[in-house]
Amino acid sequence: MTMASDATPRNTTRRYLKIARELADQIDSGAYPVGARLPPERELAVTTGVSRTVLREAVLALEIRGYVEVRIGSGVFVLPESYRSGAAQGDIEELRDAAPFDVLEMRRMAEGEAAFMAAQRISEDQLKALEETLAEMEACLDDVTRYDIADARFHAIIGEASGNQLLQALMRQLWDYRYGEMSSLWYNQTRSITNRRNTVLDHRRILAALQRGMPDIARTAMQAHMDQVNERFFALVME
Image (cartoon, rainbow, N blue to C red; front, side, top):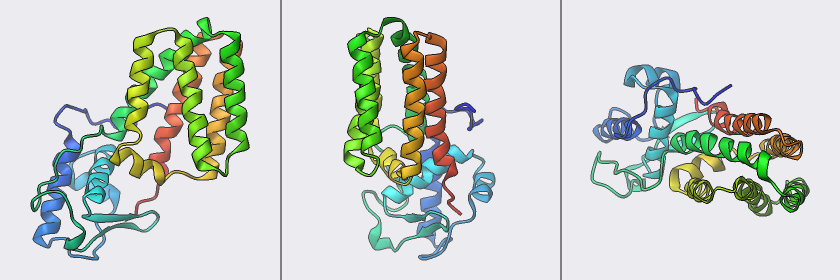
């Protein structure tokens, strides 16, 4: 499994924004009245001519602006006009934060290479810190705040162990995007204890490769972890 779930080319025009605006126009015009459920995801993807990735990012943008509510397992429903915020009718402005899948694609590349480099350069102190951080994650599966801090620390240590300051800075910037409006909205919908346990397992595989000094395996394990994070978005049943 790779990050190639979206076969539609990405570009700087942020195609999801175009689709969000088109859907907002349809909602404003009454094509989808208040309380109505939008067509199933696959149908909408066909009618709008975009991939599931782009469509889901468009729906996130609409949800942030109060046009729709995503009810996992039920569908996407139109909210009353009083919920809508931020822009003139039909004009969904570009959000300041990066689109979630752009972030995940970059994290897959950057953190995969960081793991590759770390496997060759990591110190005993850094390995010990990773072990302690992983133990913290396992110990606080039911405490989301503590878990998130430990999760972020695990990735940061690997960035430090890469020995490349520019790569560390890039990883910090990409991690910060996780707290943007779109990424937070998506991430909060995937915060199950099962996913937290699976992340611990992924981290354990990454740590094992680092402990053995196996760069290629470390990179593969990190990329596989990013693929799993990506797949959680598609596992959400939105219809």
